[in-house]
Length: 538
Ligand code: G6P
Ligand code: ZN
Image 1 (cartoon, rainbow, N blue to C red):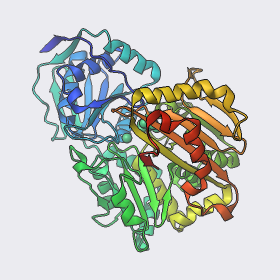
Image 2: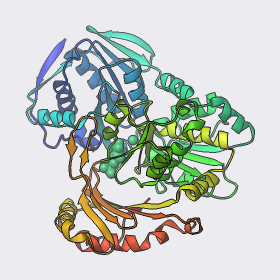
Image 3: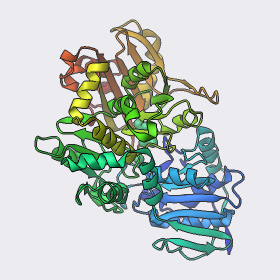
Image 4: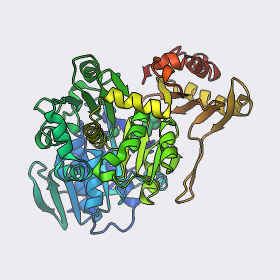
């Protein structure tokens, strides 16, 4: 039976950089998730009888909202729902299913790298038929709908058994429970040289992969341990738990400390990697060498033809604006296009669909390609493994060799987390007003507020971050995070290009110290936020 339930709008159901994210208790308010899901459906056209992919990263509340989403999909007229066993799907695996089975779209339940559990975060995002995050036009429409919604449709059916693989009927809709890993693993096998990686393992090569108690555990165990033959235990924290086992599943040097401490010292494994809550981010380290996401993109691009999936070469590279310019130098050498987009994976979608870019990357630990329309943590790990298997050099040698060939873009991001939202907005506003007077001072050549003109659909996106670009190519960038759920997070991105290999060994914060000091004084960070130093440095 289909019910039409009367409801009233909730304030603040505005999707951020990557869907709607709120604390679990907010999502748990009666009608809250239902309102948002119905607003998604009300903003779409033509899905009657079509397939919807549903899955999540297993965080607390996942199981409840999945059942709600299935009932609402049935009541709204979808013909089929494809859902990962036990409600699990990594974000890139969901993107793959949407594309492979030509689904109308997908609903992914995740708050990505934000902590989980009853007091943690929850999130819902919609991905379109190309497998990528909903474009701005659609998220704007969804938000507008949340403000006027007066009812939602839901069936009264009992919970679907998500533990059992196979099909069941829910009224006129079919629910198909699928193994979350199989299709994804097949895709990885088609892109990378698994035999070469096995041969590398046979030489005694070792690695550790930290799934951080989140979604990539089952994916990494199947691919790294079962298929490639790394020993059991290579995957740490491999069971997805509703609270991620207390981990903050953000693969950076701070939150993946357990892995970093294992891999960095002499005598540790040759290679280390981690992924985030929903499996789209990655951290890459080698013995004694942390690879910044910006460098990782550049190195993957420079070595892509060593892998079967990219043997033909790349059509272009895209990076988000705050990501370092290291990839630009590779694109220049390869004589391929290089695109600078606003922060947020959705901005890569058009470039990938149009065949203008093959690899994309962001400083926020996201790397990916045209194989899906999301960034992909395990994909990056496997691409690195494939390159290591072909080059038979250490991670550190590959990275320093890359710097020697292209120069090094020293790079660091300073985050001031949970600052007062008003103070943060005031700081950005003051910078905006100061822009005309900044150029010409302190070696700054241009100062602007980044705007992006999409070369495919002609749309313009404004106010994407304050950029101070220095005469020598150094950059300081300021923007406010679009993914936080408490207060505001000010991100300051600092970059300096160093062509001479003799200076490449300098410690990063040291190499950037002048720019760091300037970044604080120009924006009056301490006066305005009360913070003398960032809370996280990556
Ligand atoms: C999510 C998106 C990324 C984006 C990141 C930025 O992870 O998927 O594409 O780069 O958020 O987060 P921020 O907190 O800086 O807005
Ligand atoms: Zn994520």
